Length: 124
Image (tube, rainbow, N blue to C red):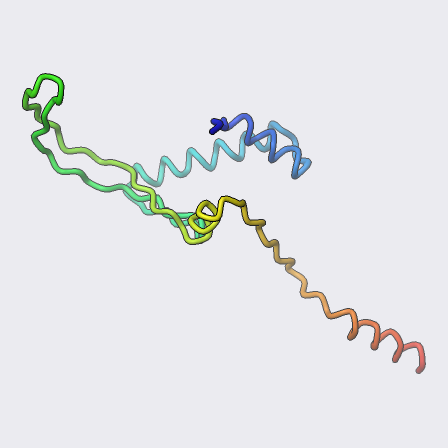
């Protein structure tokens, strides 16, 4: 299993989108910074089909050092929880990345309809 770094992701996005590496790096870093800022504020971030980031409060507790069996107090803290979204879960379970469907803002008419209109306009 390989470890992928932010630098490698930036390179992949640059190659795929043909956007300048510097711009891609800035956008990626700003996205990560904004996620951190919102989590620090206690907000929940939801990315449909990808997953949800949220902060959970963990209560103070008494833990035990398994090596020395000594009791240790653990302070209350806030932790980030990530819940996997449907599309990511299904994709990981199948082991094959699913292609992302890009929907155009303009609806294309079917070829048959377009061809019929061209033929009708030519005969008039």
